[in-house]
Amino acid sequence: MAESMLRLDASVLDPVLTGDIEAFLDPALPFAVPSLVVCADPVKPDAVASPESAHTFADISPATEVFVIEGAGHLIHDELASRDTFRNAALDFLDRHGLMS
Image (cartoon, rainbow, N blue to C red):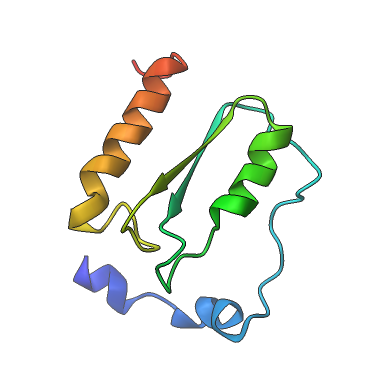
């Protein structure tokens, strides 16, 4: 992992850091497939996707669920404290939608 981190082009994060990132989702278009939007705790300073914006998509996308992990920051799946909660939420979602094999 350390080797791949050394090869990372950190400049790809510049638009995020400067606030100039372009929207990559159209909030007027529903998701076409079952989706799980996992959000960090909105009180964390590095939380990117707010539960409110996630619920905007859930409101127009019938098979979209929003799951907020309290205490988790942006790297939800990497944080030891939230990893199991994230994993269990993802596996439960996949199982309920018949996507586990």
